Image 1 (cartoon, rainbow, N blue to C red):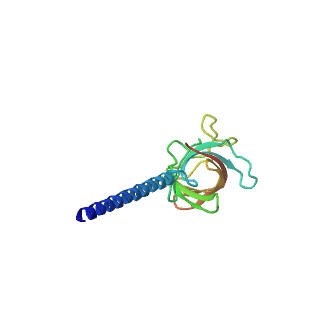
Image 2 (spheres, rainbow, N blue to C red; image 1 turned 90 degrees about the vertical axis):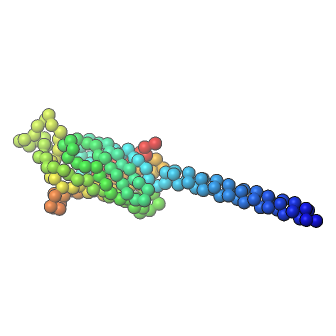
Image 3 (tube, rainbow, N blue to C red; image 1 turned 60 degrees about the horizontal axis):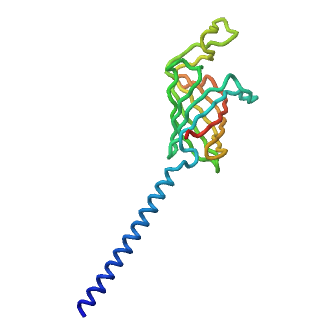
Length: 188
């Protein structure tokens, strides 16, 4: 009877160990699936190639040629931006750093600041100092620039945005505002 009881207990123990192993492997598999799902793009998080168009705030008409930019919206709500364009002198504008928050189902508010590291004079057609060999620029003071845009996903990989641009002197004085629109495509 002792031998029979031992075998029965051994079978139960083996069955229990097998069940435990099966449950653990299922839990580990679910954890891996959840991990993979959380690595998939969610909302705007990810890198975006962006074509920006400066616009007249009153009419919405384009002002100048579009330029390219790169924006990365990080999980957790921070943002990094690298602007293109020729209005800034080389090295004049830092990369942008900021935040994004959800406003609605596919709508997000993004806001970032970039430093203007030195002052440049305007170079505008029709002015006495215009140099046609140099880039056309309204000129910028050392200080900062703040961009605020509403970013709207049209699908998982495409978005549009529109908003304002503010320029501040180093002492915090606002000296210029503007508007812009953008078309974005997720970098994949």
